[in-house]
Amino acid sequence: MKKMVSKIAILFLAISLFLTPSYAAPALPGSSTTSNNVAGPGDPATLKSALAEFKNLSRKEKKERLKQVKKEMKAFKASKKNGGEPSTNTLLLVILAIILPPLAVYLHQGEINKKFWIDLILTLLFFLPGIIYALYVILSEE
Image 1 (cartoon, rainbow, N blue to C red):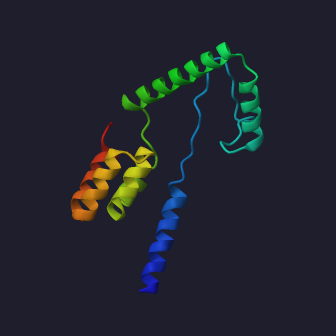
Image 2: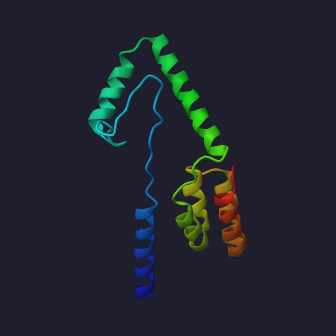
Image 3: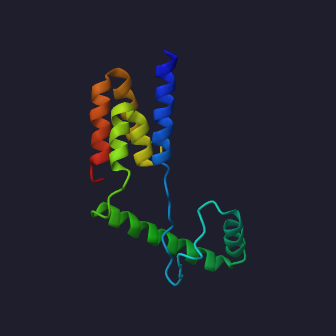
């Protein structure tokens, strides 16, 4: 029993290492980014300087920047919906959907929403429909 639990724990650890998301913020119009000066998403110095810069803006400029960000997010979502580049994690999500369907749906959606809850209920009641629904959510074009 201990061997099986330890093997499952190692498997989940290995899968979690491969499924760590790498988020990249879309570039704003008028901003130039090169590969040399791009900092990671968790770089505290960059975050503090960006927050300080945003706080120093006037109210009108803040609204304008937020509108730009919303516009870029809409464009990103539209390109993803219209057949943009597929995620490289799809294969790993399919494998995870067979092992633990609700976790795969959560990682694919990025939040706990109604699709997650439907898959959790299906998995708890009948395991096979939970797997099928998780595969449907992951492989669908939504």
